[in-house]
Length: 136
View 1 (cartoon, rainbow, N blue to C red):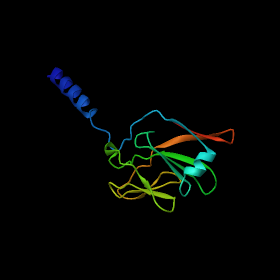
View 2 (view 1 turned 60 degrees about the horizontal axis):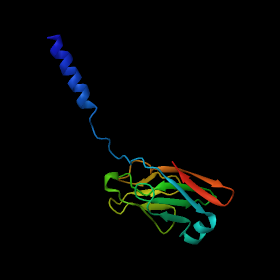
View 3 (view 1 turned 90 degrees about the vertical axis):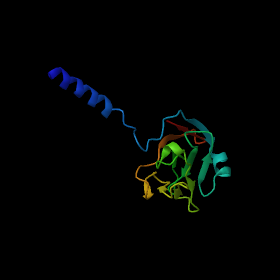
């Protein structure tokens, strides 16, 4: 009898660990460089969109205080769809065109449902006052 209980317990533990984690943006290697001059020329409303980096591209933002932040464009709402967020005209928020969710471009936090999780943020550093380096 105890053998059956132990067997049932093992099966339950195995099945409980097999659940799919929801709203998970996958880890990918990111190492992207852009000069401040390139950023100034290519950015619109202090927002630079970079394709072919991260999961759904990168979004690099120069904040009103003059610092920089970088996020993956992949929305945290149904990330398996790899829906890329689109910056709003203000340059302060971005919208997921697939779900209508809205995120702050200052810190990546959700601003409108159905968003519940913050955008995936990347490390960004200024090297030699000339080069922005985005990594994870």
